[in-house]
Image (cartoon, rainbow, N blue to C red):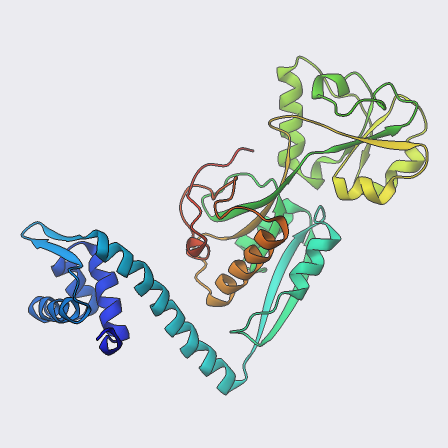
Length: 331
């Protein structure tokens, strides 16, 4: 019996579930209320299950209806993807995504960005644009990139992000430094030594955050040198008092004999990698890329279905299907 159900019928059921009102669902589906009610009765008879409890107050979905709607939504999505893929294959259309990548992004993730293949978009070209995170966010708002992978972005109503990786800063010191034997260090301990620190233009938000945290500790930063890249550290790390602030990737690049790295453990100072897009971006191509990328990340890191660091306030259309609850994200 259920094989006689049409895609239009599934869309009707989903519309009624989302609107919870026959009049509103009928307007959405562009049919009359009597026609919708009649079709609903036919569907329920065919699957031999009541999907909604109807009353003058509206249409309340039953538990059986909830199960049905979940599968109906998947069927609708699969159908439309199939139609889209058929059209794309027929036309042989080429597609291009411009993706911004933070200078903090690891080579492994850069390789992953380039290697992703989308079954629906067979002729896809990926262009990587590498800039500092704050510049990438500006490029995103100007629509000069389609997506951006940025580090610890500040909150913005125009941009929606999802965090997929969190790391701590690594402190690189000489092996005869007083901190060298420690498994980790706290900000108050690091503040007692001169720093090799990143310039503010590299990441203004993180730069200011760290200085605010120092003020809470009633400390001040003693910055001996300001840096823009990790490779500047080795020749400057010329005594056993200096402490270099680096990302894990940057620290690995410059570690050599005589140098050690120590993680900085702080509840507020973290390197959070976010995938960012405009809040009003409804591109099907971007949506498919986001889903595929996050699937790879889940598989590699074996993350649970619910990310520990969820979306910012508001659910974005590109990542609704990932079922991550909207919430605020710590800086």
